[in-house]
Image 1: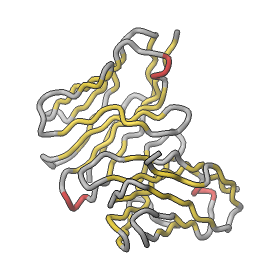
Image 2: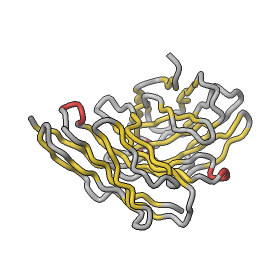
Image 3: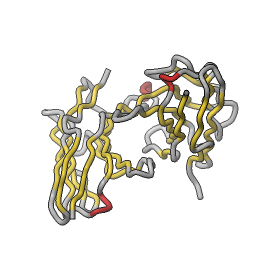
Image 4: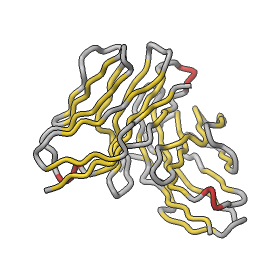
Length: 117
Length: 111
């Protein structure tokens, strides 16, 4: 079974600065997808970014970018120019690309991002 | 608005009571899922369904039941509530190769 590890329970960043959240995963598969989800106090789960394992290029969405190191099984999220609205819990998630996995996700325990003015 | 609708948003149950958490999606997604999120933890899969009439257990199914009579609806049943079931419950749906769309969650407290 795949496991997803987020080793940082909490990260603090000042507005306009950059913070990087780490995520490692364990899998023997070659076809899979990785995600970062944001959960603000409203509890809503919001997709931040998605990475396909077969793509070498790192995904980017505005101020959010990832550093995907397939051999090292590492998938870190960088938040640039941090804003107060970025304060939330961030979850790393893994989904197998095999059809018999039925789209199930494996989530990490989360990293709380605190943004200070 | 298209999406996943969960009801209720909050509920307090007494030990031994039963309830059904409702989940409906209007995106014609085949796949639907129920997760629970305990404080300070990630989401764990309770049950999932890959189509009407097809359901299967996830990582933490004990104490729960599901049914999927239509593509749109995927209710989660708690038969004998226990304090260990105090959690936030999320329903999600997707296409087979797609990204999840989550509901807004149900906060359940069992006292």
